[in-house]
Image (cartoon, rainbow, N blue to C red):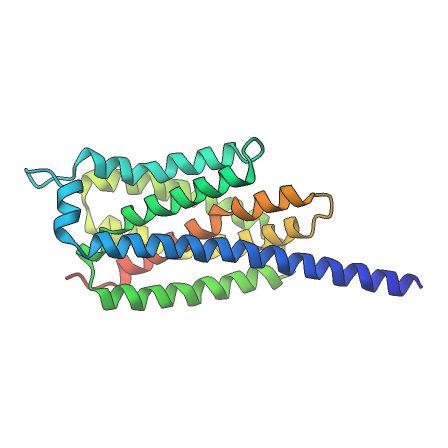
Length: 237
């Protein structure tokens, strides 16, 4: 009898975990779809991009810089408001975040060939999927590895901000190479952490729904991996 109960509980836990990840990836793919459509629409219309994001002198407009950094601010709002905001509010913020990221990504269509963008996207998807599977299936504890990678990521972020003003191609290439290593590693680490959360039986339905929406990390990791690989692989127009 105990064996039957244990098997039933195991099957229920496995089904709950699968359902959790289905929802997480549904939100992630929806976000990528929104971002991709907006980026393609704006980036493939140079006149539209120039009207809103480029000044008469040829430099980026203040609106461009607002769009560039607003996703970072909004991600903090979503993280900090996770426990206070309703599921509906989190969903709206997630959609807004995806749209802002699409506007930010529109500039890549002015810099890189569309074939290079498509090729890099598929390479990124394959690398992301491989590391996600590794993080989900490995028995090794990746927590220390993840903490180290986040420290490297903070250094990369600071260097990237500096390079916006320095404009060094060499530094940009080094940051991109580091990014591939960091973002693939963090994908495995985060998948393992998500698996542990998904198997937490103490969370109620509302908490799990919020957690499914709140998984900006996977979306951000994929976008950053894609941009890092595009910097390495992409041929400029």
